[in-house]
Length: 377
Ligand SMILES: *Cc1c(COP(=O)(O)O)cnc(C)c1O
Image 1 (cartoon, protein in one colour):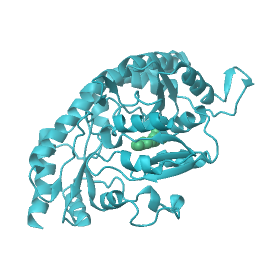
Image 2 (cartoon, rainbow, N blue to C red):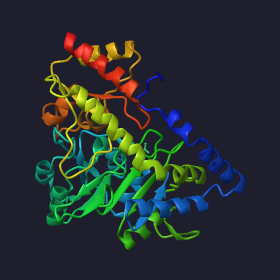
Image 3 (cartoon, rainbow, N blue to C red):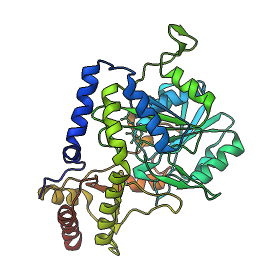
Image 4 (cartoon, protein in one colour):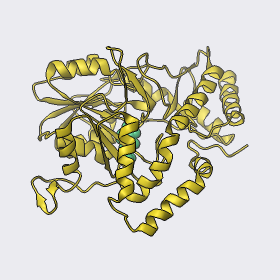
């Protein structure tokens, strides 16, 4: 059996090695390292895949969020609502821009932002909502869109973990995660569902005016070279990464299908076990399983992880500390007990290996050792 890893990037690479190697060498030989043709071609191909009018490539998923907030013209003191159960980047850029992060709890089944709490958190200073499509499926976008419309708020979808997921809106139309709100953002960090071999990110919008603003903000605030109308940042996807992504994008749906298959294997093995709650798939969203995350009930999580590690099986906790309990984001507005769902999740979630290359032998090995521990303790 191949060694088990949370994410097996080498096995995935080996299957398309010749194509990738050739594409990287072509960029090196062309010397078009920055904003070369590969970046423009990738942009077009991703626009087509996403079914979105504009893709703005950038340096990483965190920058994508920052550039999005800058392009919307949010001002210090403006409040931005996001979930407390997420990766730090979502709240980090809000705070960095001197906006006020307003954290809310998540749904205990889908891990998406809780629309009722979003509603309750709105004040006259609220300007935007950042739903995070956590672990690979969409937050309740119908509800979030409705709230945003009623209160005239922007929506930035953090799609770093859900590229390729599809959402069926209340009117029956489907859209890719990240193309529903005003702006969507994503990351091509190597372990994401569409990963490059370094850092990368992208921003999505269907709004022409916003697209121009996003491009300008990601390019030193200039719309014309050496003429800077606004303070921007330097955030680019480099050509080598774009060339790699062009080779990987045609495989994304297969990669996501493989993840889904692995999740189905896990689900079948863990079904009806009272100590294990398998991931709940939201009714309006497909799931691309960036993570396969179980909720444990009455299981010593640390001991389970030790047991698995002893057998050569990695397991991770995403995320062990909620944002409102992080040293840097602590706030008098929310102490311990304020967000009961998240506080339960940080103590009971566990994520098992999940990637496009898992085979049945590996899945059988992982599930049997999880069940061995669960059934004996
Ligand atoms: C990975 C991730 C990011 C940040 O992406 P980087 O490319 O690492 O900057 C932002 N939000 C979420 C939810 C993520 O998972």
